[in-house]
Length: 184
Image (cartoon, helix red, strand yellow):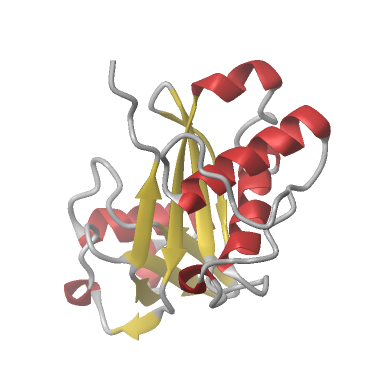
């Protein structure tokens, strides 16, 4: 990869990076190298999720709540690859699907504990539920999730936690970047 990150489709750099990481891995079996010069906004380490959709349906979503890499570009590359081939809910993405994928990248802010449902807002905050060594996560702003009760119930179901067991709750904010739709 060149020193400067080329943005050939007019997308946000993190969205373009996720797309290129998936394409490089699916087509060539290689991990995309990040550029040597990363813009200052993307240098601080952060947790990140990458969501892939195909025809507006979920096709893969994997992320990290806390950083595992030294910068956001590296975090996004690893999570984009995981979303395309390691999400246990879906088979690996195939080459003929690449032109149909839509990408969303979420950069997570550090989480904070909350006392209860009143401290949650599913449009603003993601939620983490924890109980007996299990945990579940749900990102904010998901379609159809309008109440904290529903958000927590879904996160608990993902983790195999009974919401009646009063799991510990944490909330987090995200910066969301999604693929801009092309004009017809």
